[in-house]
Length: 183
View 1 (tube, rainbow, N blue to C red):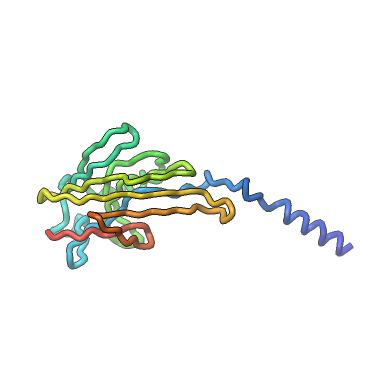
View 2: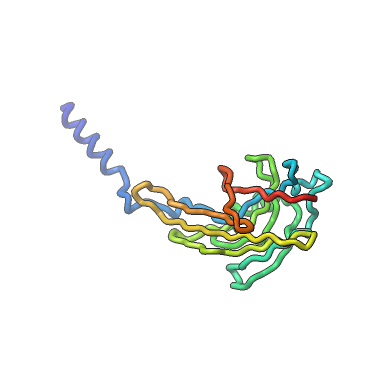
């Protein structure tokens, strides 16, 4: 009798497991976008509205490819908005214009450009983003992104790189990098 119960329990375990081909990748999709902090050489947050030296609303221009319209657009980074942090959660498969949020994980403000949620097999090659600073200078970012579903691992394989003024940026564990600017 014990052998019969053991055999039935084992059979139940094996039939309850999903085959790797049945992996539901739609339940989670990685987000792709460009996220960066702006600090002065001393490490002060230049997006923090409480910092008198911080960039003001509209001072920084961002030129990017708007996937929704297919056009290259220039917009200005708005002020920090608590609503923007909540709003991003509701979007899917869209390009969001640049905005500033307070990132609680690092207790810093950051610029978010993009926040795409993309189809399963996606490659972005050399997406160029231009940052126009109040002093008239420009920084150039290049986004390289490839995601593919690894059914064996039941997870995503992601290659994500940001090139800033011809230098590959080191990303923190949250996928963000820092641009240092003098004010």
